[in-house]
Length: 319
Length: 172
Ligand code: HEM
Ligand code: SF4
Ligand code: SF4
Ligand code: SF4
Image (cartoon, rainbow over all chains, first blue to last red; front, side, top):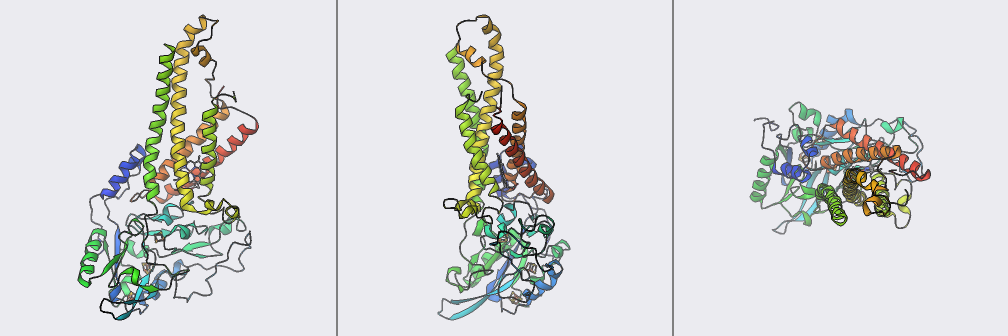
């Protein structure tokens, strides 16, 4: 089998061209990504194949154990009192939701098929790796980053644990562990609260050309990883085959994770809540910013034109 | 000089107030420190709301900066050219003479504020581009932009507080 993580050159996508046109300035040119020709990687998840064995959950914990937090107690007192202490370090074995030590969990969903049969689906849930990830883009310290292969990850050396990434994530994926990270060296009482953790798509394995642990281990080959265009084609083929439904192509402006389900996503019944993400439609959270970028190009032109106009008017009056 | 340019100074003051507020709201502090609990200020903890406000204010600030800069440049060129001829015909104050009584030199505190604003505008615009889809800046550049943006913001706030208290103007 050829490596699914081939790094073949690919045409710059038209969206990047559009983005550059919007910015329309020299700045935009300077921003041309070094490897814009590298197409993002997408994982395709065929929900119908998953048997809920949780092999992927434990493989994820094993493969990433060296990244997990090891906080020392007692934690420094934080002010004001409303600041929550989030400590999962004694509950590392919790696997029925996302935690700082469980970046992937199996969500149970009940549903009724077209034939009227009641079924239970098991859905591997973790970070969606949004095409334009608000958790990365809106972090005020730049603690998170998105790689050109489309994966996003939070740098545990820089993250202060303010949890903004979780608030702006449409699925509230990142999870906090108090008592670790850079904030301890700054003003632990008044700013920061630990480090945020989430699936980083096993970047260390991807770098070596390997597959993420959860994909590698799965006995049912539920997940496939590959170039975005290939995976999108595969997803629509699969959806056609099983007369199924797709999630992730449109959500939040598109994500680098695509779920295919035999039952419509809005008919799945499952638990949501803390650490248990939904499967609802999501509008593009970064779209307002991209549209307003255009206003920032027009505004100075309008301002300069107004000043020139005023100047000519005065010249005329003085003449 | 405090009585000149009332309109543009009012507009600038309003933009500055909201851009600073929405800028600081990009950091998760207003919720932690109860500010957003104050009735009417809940929006300060809503990141997407303050994100859009910061962007709109940035567009307005860019428009105002371009207007003032071009106006100042044209006026200075215009007034030196006209004043030589005009100064001789003393007595009746033409509109050109009136304008010649307006300030043409930027003060030092004004320079500091212009420097900080320029830094904010440049780093801010880079960050806007960074936020577009499929734009990947190197990680160090993103961290640098964030810290510089914050630093320029602090300098601007400090210089603004100074000019406010000491009643210093932008130009003389
Ligand atoms: C043209 C002007 C400006 C532009 C384009 C701009 C743009 C931005 C952007 C893109 C961000 C990142 C957060 C987000 O995407 O919402 C940001 C953050 C921020 N801005 Fe601005 N901004 C401008 C002017 C200002 C000014 C005048 C201040 C005044 C102090 C300010 C203060 C801040 C602060 C404190 C942050 C959060 C901390 C950080 O990320 O560094 N900005 N700004
Ligand atoms: S290992 Fe595969 S089959 Fe087992 S729970 Fe994970 S995705 Fe499902
Ligand atoms: S799903 Fe959430 S955490 Fe994952 S990339 Fe998107 S915004 Fe970030
Ligand atoms: S890609 Fe890696 S980090 Fe992400 S869920 Fe799978 S095993 Fe865990």
